[in-house]
Image (cartoon, rainbow over all chains, first blue to last red; front, side, top):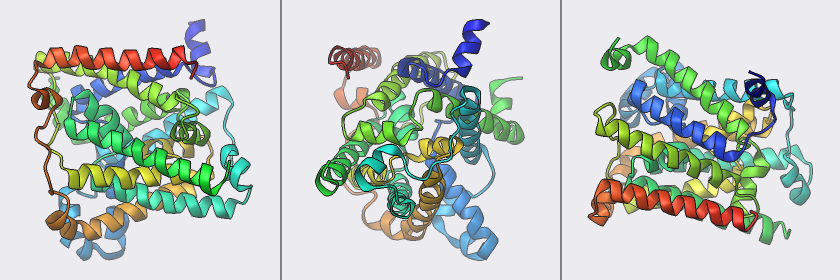
Length: 178
Length: 186
């Protein structure tokens, strides 16, 4: 009981413990919902729902929203769930902090929230676009596709990191000069 | 209640999706990967927490999934990929991953920890990016996405090896990689 309480309130766990628990959670999702845990589908569904509120006929006519139907279902609920879960975690450990600029960014590019949010927005657009282009994200391909030994998922995960490492080094080591 | 009845119950699945999301977000935060510094540190190769979390999830999940599949409780969702979809899409994702410093799941987790750059920049950007893809999808589908398909759906099919041999080899490779990381003090 005491150990459990300590675990729930500690700021971080061993990455191996958290990872192993995510592996078990993934198996439960396959078992109970017949689904891989993925996070990028939710953004398509949410975007489709926003689009429907503005112009329902246009969304209804788009091929992509026929394949990924904009509705509040399992795949959409993952994202509000993740927000709540992470919030519960920091609430228990007393680590909730509102920040605009993360410290690693601040050290290289300064404390301007405008610059940070502008780059984050550009990154978010590429991330959302690329995730749908590749058909999944770090979770859908990287963890749950790899679990299923999917060749496409493992190749995709390698490309996430190859592209990510190249651009991060360019951004911080070349442009930032750190 | 049978598995089939649980899976076909729409309202139950909505609740399960939320619960799975809550557990996932909780574990991502406890694993340390909802932190921009940790993710960008992984891409700068100075902090290997992201790979430690991912590989241990895959190590546990791979055995669990294939045992469940062996006994008929789960089915594979692995689909055929292509250079056009998976490699190009993966590299675009990578560029966004580095600029944003979060991925689609951890960006939501970061919002839960109070990261406003993840909310105003990241989540808004992802909605825009997903919308642009939906607009371009018919054109991309016809021109690029199905270009140069991969020769196999799964790794055992690709290598022409028995499933369980591949699992043992994969587990050994991942364990070896993690041991090397620990040995190097990364």
